[in-house]
Length: 436
Ligand SMILES: NC(=O)c1ccc[n+]([C@@H]2O[C@H](COP(=O)([O-])OP(=O)(O)OC[C@H]3O[C@@H](n4cnc5c(N)ncnc54)[C@H](OP(=O)(O)O)[C@@H]3O)[C@@H](O)[C@H]2O)c1
Image (tube, rainbow, N blue to C red; front, side, top):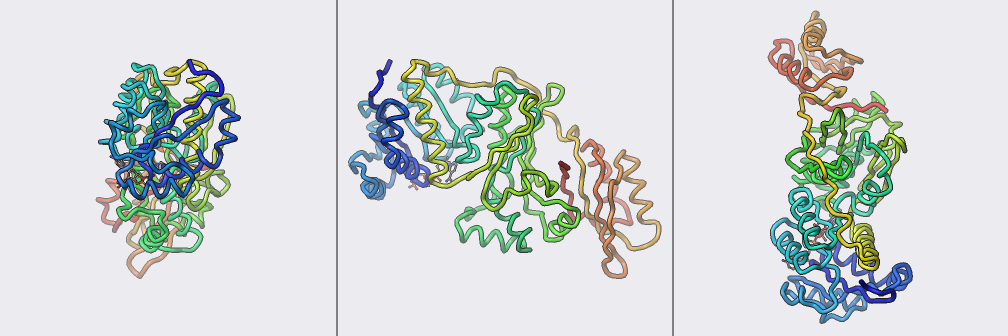
């Protein structure tokens, strides 16, 4: 066991955005961290492909440049290395290096959501087998400490639901579309120019990045392994200005939400655009900010808000995990916070989700059309809560409806029949509605 006032050696793999943010915090807050943890937490090694750049960046921060190597063997063999921090990203080399670090009895901290959402169980098992820690707070919602909250601070609760804005790029796009009436493609280009969206934005706008994060949150909240493949995913690509304006008129905003619930022993886990009432606490979460709204049976409603990405916010979560490992080393309790997935619960199928729906249809503008549409919906148990007609040209009109709650299976059948109907020219969009 380590004694008080000992040094704790940290090695970072990947000195990119988050790696540099982490190094900056370790240097900037060196004194306060050592007082809080009763020992010096020291960056003693960096593994990086771009060695020259890394050396220059580290020198500028006040580190010795010769701590940089591009050789993983040398990195792992560094004397005094206690904690390996993986910030390279990806699921190939990163997984291999993490496994090798765990096998070498090093505790690991990672921000890698792709890896944890797909191989979390394998990596957590390897950590347990090797009696070391594996922490991954920064993998969900960047600087917001939601994983520790779910694992520790809300442990008393049955978690009834989690609803999160966990992707800053899509939240930025939807905020700009709502506030400035921008269209999706223009706002996406603007987000790319500002560095908020990748050149290939598919993972963000398609909802897959949020799906990885919600898989991780659901696994922790419901003590059952939920992987990316279990998550129902829809992105924001089909959201038009027409939908945004309809939402505004109906008293809603549109957000891309990651939702996880457990009902009757089944886990429901999904990511898709949602119309939420403007009074919902998540409605005011704008721009690139993230927030996670958790409802527990004892605590009631809680919300955790902050920066979901960026060098220092994400570095904040990484350094917090480093400190958690230090605490475990000091107390000789490594490997006690391993995999929390003790059960294997079934995943609810899409047809069993229950939602209200917003539906925008292009229909024939003639008498009897409303009755025909109501009949199709009614035949499948879908009832209309509100309906607005907007006239188009002489022949067609737009119908905007919000339904009462209905099982998705029934709604899908109604939708299929509507698409076959001669009075329906097209379904422009369908968005789920959550009322607060
Ligand atoms: N950026 C954020 O705000 C944020 C937020 C939350 C979580 N994360 C997660 O944090 C991780 C890092 O993200 P990031 O944005 O910091 O990425 P990044 O800026 O691309 O940094 C990754 C760094 O690792 C280096 N690298 C990659 N493979 C390597 C290898 N085999 N050996 C040595 N160095 C290697 C890269 O070098 P090259 O450029 O030469 O490949 C790059 O310098 C990812 O898992 C990401 O999902 C990021």
